[in-house]
Length: 306
Image 1 (cartoon, rainbow, N blue to C red):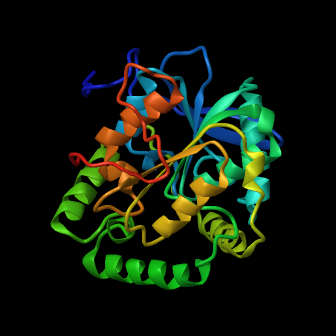
Image 2: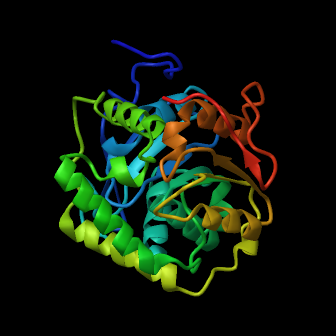
């Protein structure tokens, strides 16, 4: 079996990890896991309209070198049955139901974009269940600016249709030469898995997630001071979908947080800078031999690209 540098030990990498199912709360959840068992697992929570196959293999494999990584399709997403709820509260409850169905009473969370909002909700609803959190490309509920998101996303989808590209080329990466190279590398990595691919996101799921995002943007802010666990917040410095300032605001509201802003990047900054992000996450989660994660609320990382 072909492997890449930094691949997890064992029989599988992200490209070949089998899809499994667990039934809980009346829902048949689809999930994949890899990495060493034992200790506190890292549960990944994904972005709007994403399924299992949309996780960057370099993130999953890189973290799975040292940690038990679990990724899953929440209610109504991809191969998980039922219907997607239209509010973050239920998404958080569903995620907790899934975690407990696997027998875990303590997890670390890595939430990207919408997944970051779900991670915050899960931590507020079930504080004893969460040990640490990584929140990337996301902001606090009620952070504002949600009214402009529809126009930004709509324009990106129009550009994508004209260019015959995935909209994430325009939403996740800057349209600079550097950003275009990063986008091309990201999509090449997503194509590495060729077996046991997930089901595509349904229209019901897209619309419900969109309602949840809009509702979250217009909701009253949560009291994030209640989240006492360590939190690593990350974003690009020019995020079109979740303004980078919202990530900084999120870090300020959390009592035990650190912030990394990656330069010359956008919503997909953690993918563009995966070589820097993965060691930072490992250090944050407890891998002291790895590169040190950001330690201040205004740290800026620099480094190579994909």
